[in-house]
Length: 336
Image (cartoon, rainbow, N blue to C red):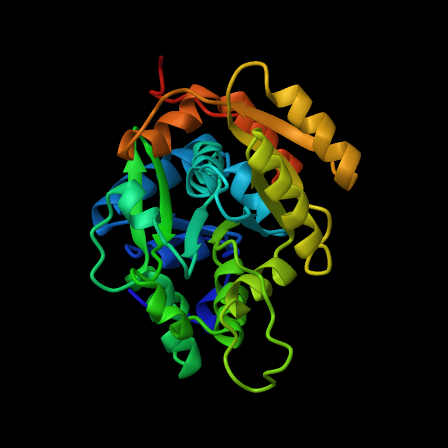
């Protein structure tokens, strides 16, 4: 047994054998699973099946490489997607969870980050009991130049429902702790996790104000601005009522200089209001509503995963509009 060092990696692919990595921590597993010519398992007990499959393939004269095509394809182009909405936007958090769910359902290694420094709620929505906010812990390690792949695997939580699994870095529980998530640290964290996971979904707060008269002091909304700048795409969430339409139009103007035109969706839309709201938004902002997600009456913890499986096609469309390449969905126990 040896550690997966650079010397070991240079031996791949080995002409007479296979290299199997045992990676129990989530972040390490996703990283190792993306390496070419490496078989990755989560425990030593799983190595028995690996040995069996290698022996059988050698007897058959065929090569085996148990890595999904999804991981192989997307590993070359990982995606960071920010999910944002103006104040009062309905279901920004559940949108982030729903997109994470469909990505994980499609076989992509997925990390969901809560960087809403004004009102984080992902841990509550998913029922995660986390004494230490994961994203803030990652930022502290980044500030000390101690953030590594193994540390991400240690501090990230794993959420699983009905066979769908993804990792979560929870947010700060109190708005007064916003300074723990500085923009420079956020940049370092994103750079690292983008090399580990196929898809990184980031839930950001509504505030994007910049205090231009303060040069060196920490910015209250610096984390949100940094994420919007560095994200490969942004999903903007709006409401279909009169107040929601007004807010999303103003909000889109506020983030105009921070990112490319976002993927605009209307969430929790009551019947009959979506088309009129989309027309009004296009008329006054030139933005096109890409998806209209109907209200389904779910509430509580069940809502987070329930909404993803109640409208799977719509959420897949949202993910694909955001630049996430989703393979054909695999079979699941999600049944209605």
